[in-house]
Image 1 (cartoon, helix red, strand yellow):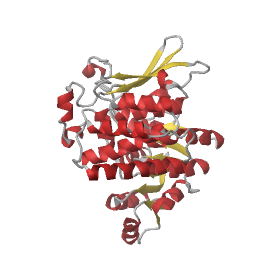
Image 2 (cartoon, helix red, strand yellow; image 1 turned 60 degrees about the vertical axis):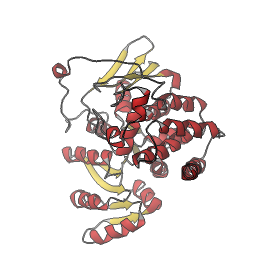
Image 3 (cartoon, one colour; image 1 turned 90 degrees about the vertical axis):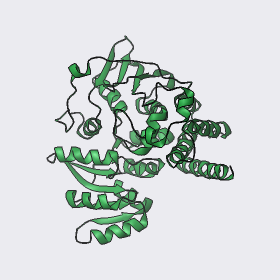
Image 4 (cartoon, helix red, strand yellow; image 1 turned 135 degrees about the vertical axis):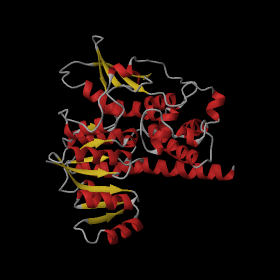
Length: 384
């Protein structure tokens, strides 16, 4: 029986993780749940899964939850200290980091230091702090098991490779809903349109990132850390059917790819049950219904998030943190109707151009960069 903590249990990854647990109650047990502030859903999850600990980042919401579940033997903790305590609990074997944003860095580090395996869905952790996370995981002999469908596909394609070396990683993307648009059309995209992803069901922040191709840029940076490759060894390919989730090309030219339906429960389950492929709550891929596979080059001139991310990865140091922090701010601003879709790229580019790179940033440096970028952008757009 594997004991699981789900950080971000009320979000898209978290709720799908719990679907997997329901499928395998004899193998997986939830011992800790955590979220930002969605306590109505968290209360339902607590009553179903009976965790020993529940963490809520928002302290007022945590107080409300304590009242709601006072009839249950669950310890409710709050704030960043609460998230850290939940992830490093003695009653946990693996932590699913499904929470969105840089808020996941400190709990992930605490979990690694406590010897917990990480089912990694919080890509910001690797993007901004990969130089800290990966050596720390090796030091504590902790497994980092990727949950993103693309990184899970790469991970699966690397199983049994023995001493074979990677030639390149082929990182696939659906291309999002706007891949056929002109520059003028892209500038007029609405929030509603951007939230309508054609193949994947995700949370709002990740859905916007996918539409802008920023998400694919973040995945390039994450892949470099997870699989010890350079940005030049990662090639992004548009695969509109989202049937091939990514592939690995070895030095002899052989390409191994992983295919399946567009259902996040498959990579989530593999991270939790590795190295076994067990029955899944997801449907099977119907190759006859699929019919064909298409491949296209990304339109880097239009979807500038991808080349900006690759530039940040090549620069290294604190630059990926700047890329991520500026995008987080711009993404949220766009969802509130404060900027146009294409301004997301302008904001990221300007933040990167203004930054003085720190070669080996600490966690404090990383979080300070985020605060400074948020403050600077708030001031800039308030004045305008």
